Length: 294
Image (cartoon, rainbow, N blue to C red; front, side, top):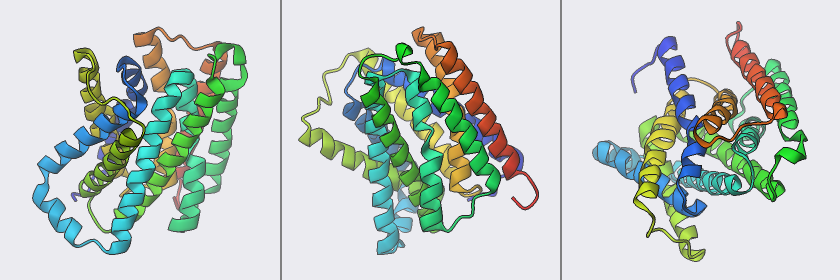
């Protein structure tokens, strides 16, 4: 894989962040079950990536050890849990609250990274996460701004965060042996397989949608999945897993703005204040990463 410059890396992170931030709005616009949305998202993304590099993928797969292949399956399972839980959470709670709670992934990433990757996390990172959590508490403080069933939605968003963390950490391990793009195909394909199995046993409808819904299903696969998640897969080659997850903390701010613009989902003052605090936490993480010795 070509070596990216510092400027190219920051552009990549910016594009990835903008792309994943569109996910919640697109999911709301696609009137389909959560499992169906996840199935289309992952299957289309995996198919397009596979078409772009069939030979290199076969070569890379043949060279995988059983342990790395198993980790690829673990990554896919974690990604499937992430999408099904998070997409379903949007049925019960607001975009702002759902995406903010999803952003607790750095906690899970830091724990898993310490356990399995032996990564040392700088002290500033923990301070930044504390600041972000304060912001999350502010966002969810006013129950009057939350719809009925929001407690279930919040729990599903947290489960989605845990799944995302498992995906990032296992991806860090696998990408020591294969390229980011080959890893993306493996993880997306295995995740799609797990989601399709879930759809079969849950008897979830996978067809018969309106043409408008199909358009949004394709957009979800192309923008937040292919462009967004794949950008962060590449970033994992250059940054630690906790740092990549921390950058994703910017998603709640952008997703809230997009929700207000396209869905007229205007956040309460507490949500605006909370998102601002979270953005401060992101800035703290970025500064810590660029300090001497980082």
